[in-house]
Length: 207
Length: 154
Image 1 (tube, chains in turn yellow, green):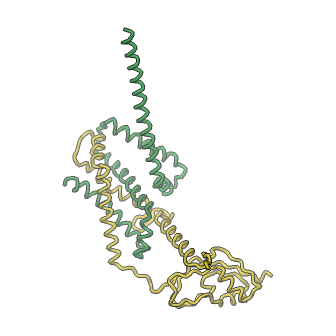
Image 2 (cartoon, chains in turn orange, yellow; image 1 turned 120 degrees about the vertical axis):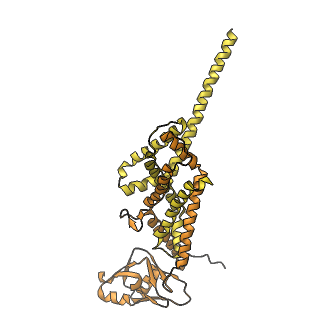
Image 3 (cartoon, chains in turn cyan, purple; image 1 turned 45 degrees about the vertical axis):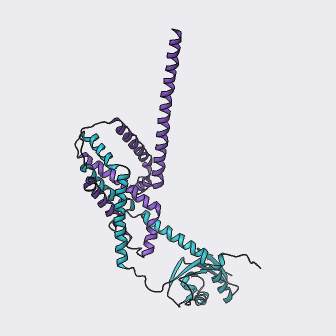
């Protein structure tokens, strides 16, 4: 009995080239005895055609059905995710440099304008003049002694929050930004798993 | 005579009610503003972030007291119009710390709005996101300096 058991763990996300054949070994880690392992490795699951869009979901049920076709006495133990997202990469992703510069300038001037609006909105100039008078007892029109360190601190605070000093990290923990990126990718994956997988949604049959 | 006394008594009572009512309004106003301030800070998650960076999770209660005392002292100083007559160089440290706090708040705010992952995905620069981040940081510094040095005179 034991040598007929196959342990399978599907990978979360797999990148393939167009018109490639997808075998079980591409999308899963397999533990089985050697003879069985070799046979299962050769099983073809899917042939990517030109009609396919760039995301294909392969469900665990498909994998199990394929193995059962080979030998129905094999016991399949599935571990981990119950589907794999196969992403067809048509050509190597290239970003355009001009677009990047444009986005950079957009962020730069955008953040410049928003901080100025914020200062005006909360009357920060008046507050700074007041603080200057409280501390030194003198009234000045432009308390730059306070305002220039404030401006530098503003940038410093943002860097501290994102845990980055020009690619060098302050400590080894992931920054909130990286966690945020990860969460976003997870949400996207969850969405395509539900929407691209025909097995996961059953429709009512209207006559 | 007794009528005059009575009127005075009633008047005094009214005064007391007026004072108590004013205290009550001030107190409830302060309560709601304080609660709102703390709620806002909690949503932004600056304090947990700081404890994470400095590895001082156990001192979180002290940080809470720091925020509360800071708010109370700031309010008192603003209302009393106190003058301390210290050298203006103290303001350099004060400004740096205050600016850092505002910077962390703005950073946390863009975080809440979920701008970054979407932007990075759209233009396909997942690995260059730090440079984009620096655009925001330099924009803030430059904008702030521009505002204080040039813009306020216009």
